[in-house]
Amino acid sequence: MHKKFVCATRNQWLVLKDESLFVSLLNLITKKVVPLLMMEHCHISDIYLLSSAPTNSTDDCYVFFIHRATFEFFYCKPGDREFKKQLFEFE
Image (cartoon, rainbow, N blue to C red; front, side, top):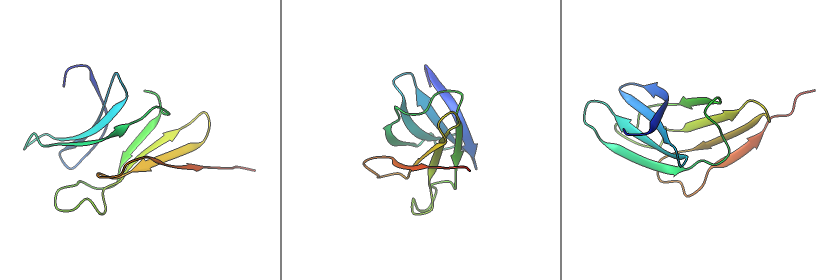
């Protein structure tokens, strides 16, 4: 965990981001690492969420990143090749 930031937690899992903005999941009990993707759009002060732990299946496991300044919403799940992006528009 050298030079990694804990962005979110859920059910013994951590969402980690390193200095190069690579995102991964780490199980604190088993030490299993699930690599995700390089995240270039969100910064350390943004909001990070983990929908569910990837314990039995990654089908319901999504990692969400919300960029507060631009209202951009990024998400992916283990195995994705790129982040999906949604822009929130407020009136």
